[in-house]
Image 1 (cartoon, one colour):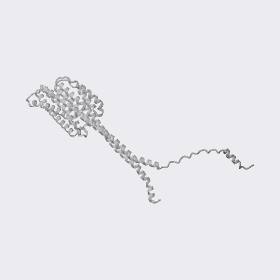
Image 2 (cartoon, one colour):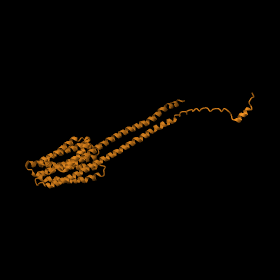
Image 3 (tube, rainbow, N blue to C red):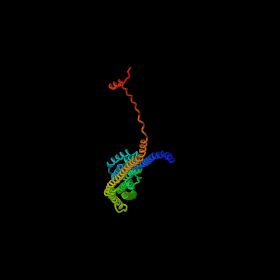
Image 4 (cartoon, rainbow, N blue to C red):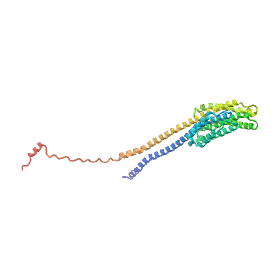
Length: 370
């Protein structure tokens, strides 16, 4: 055998080992990449699910805010708290019992519920407004807790971020500002002297807050519509936003004659304007939160598709990588000679004792006589 032949003979085992190890290395690489993609998709899916829990909680808090401000208006005007407040409290209590562990809302909700249960049904207007103001402050703090702990405030998509800023900050603050503004206007009628001057300052501040929240809310919706890939977002929100803005445009000028000292307050007009604003705000809030939930649901569907694609990406290359290994093993089995067949020993056949009769008779004729 020549030197080259011996060299090739020695190199064959190494080449065979390399051909067998290469598919394993490729399969391991695919497995590592699959694990990274699977983990990333899982984290994004958990993020979106937590955001949907936050949306669900805020959806329950919206009717509570409307009912609470309605109760404040009724107390300022000498009425009784409306029944929807009790139902709204029960609805939030149910949602909190299901989501408080994930969103960390136990203490905030407990404090707000205690405050609501201790609110006065009537009395001095300033006392009622101050008591309900404390309750609405706790409500806004609870909304902020949900917004932060559900990570809605950190959503990377521009349209969802602006929608949640509008639905979970600007609109709730606007509803509270409108309630305070209209209640101060109504209570101004019986005030004189220093109390009236102080109320006028509060009315001006509340009106400015209301107008500022409305502008910021409009900017949020506009930026969300401009930054979204959804074709239906604008149609679902813009008409409701226009209605809300019209209601604010009706309310804000009501303070001008009083601040200028040229007129008084038409309480019936204030109440009608407040009722329209409340209805428009409730409609807009529901639409905003619904659009956020739809966007998050679409995210989860997309992430599930990525998971299926990751599984396919794992299975197909793994099969392609392992195919040469299976082929090599099959070829090695074909080269191995089969074992020799087992020898089966048969028992010897017995020898016949006598020949056939005619042949025996022939041989007797040649026998030697004794």
